[in-house]
Amino acid sequence: MPEPRVIRKYANRRLYDATASRHVTNDDIRRLIAGGERVQVVDDRSGEDLTRTVLLQIIAEQEQFGAPVLSVQLLEGIIRFYGNPVQDLLSRYLEQSLGTVMQQQRSVQEQIAKAMEGPLAPLAPLAELTRQNMEMWNRMQNSMLAALAPRNAHKPGSPQDDAANDAGPGAEGPAPTEPPKR
Image 1 (tube, rainbow, N blue to C red):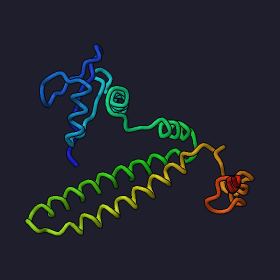
Image 2 (tube, rainbow, N blue to C red):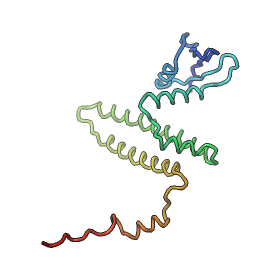
Image 3 (tube, rainbow, N blue to C red):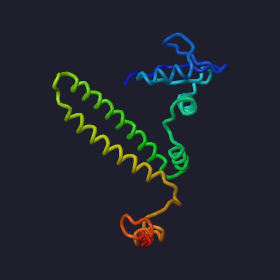
Image 4 (tube, rainbow, N blue to C red):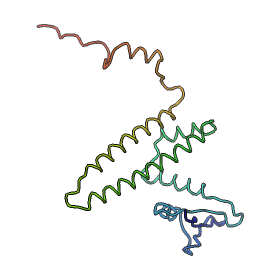
């Protein structure tokens, strides 16, 4: 993996990219990362690594002013994991999930490129890949949402669940009565 591009943060809070020999903004750093570059932000005086702090600022700016990626439910779930014994598990899960999504994205792009090569190239491999991606994504979302659900959420086997099961499948309350005859 290539060395990250070093960005220096000065006391006046300005960021300087020594590789490009220019001052940069958080948006410039966001564009570098979106373009596939790795960055490392260091304090010019102390040498302290500020990368995580700057990346969190960039995410906060994108969530506030751009198209949000993180729902309130997801943010609440993440907050619930701080200090939790399975905090490391969540971190690894999110990293692996994002890696899987990125790998699938590359695979879809490759399949689209192959499908576009010939005038009558079959789209069956792309359809199958799409189906597999959707299944994987649904499983991943369901397990993530289940892991992030509040502890006091409705649990199977509770009296509330038993009452719903007693009504039978598809029941939504009392059976409709016949209209009065005229």
